[in-house]
Length: 193
Ligand SMILES: C[S@@+](CC[C@H](N)C(=O)[O-])C[C@H]1O[C@@H](n2cnc3c(N)ncnc32)[C@H](O)[C@@H]1O
Image (tube, rainbow, N blue to C red; front, side):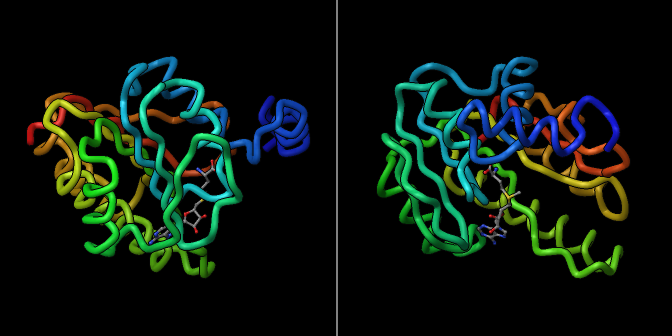
């Protein structure tokens, strides 16, 4: 912290602009830089609670917007939600049945931290891999994918795995990410199918 994105300032900004969390600014920056969501896309948000990414997505597309989280997401007009585990294939099938076409998957999911660095890193990478499996199982060819990840053990293998499924893959550290964090986002565009 201590940057322009220090907790109080960004938290207050998010609050005054009606966002449920500062994470809204991360997705806004990703969209500004990478244009992942088009105006008619159906978008699925994995790890969506409390819902600030869903609030942003709702303003970017006229398509369907669906959020999935282990925790309930308080209602947002024009947004559908499923309470469930993103790794559950039954949830993935439910998404395909509900939406038919999925153009974009975004994932800001993060496991609850234990404080043991290597254990937390392994679980975070494993969750990203589940999100990639979700995307491969549901995305339309040509679709886009955004997933939160963390630099460290096994990151490069996960990055390479993403590269096998998308024609273009880049990474992005957002300005709203806290200083000193290893958090970054992988942006996969144009799903191979
Ligand atoms: C950082 S928060 C997401 C914030 C959200 N992008 C927003 O803008 O409000 C991470 C979320 O991931 C969810 N999560 C973690 N593991 C999950 C899983 N296996 N399936 C679904 N959601 C999960 C947590 O419940 C938590 O709400």
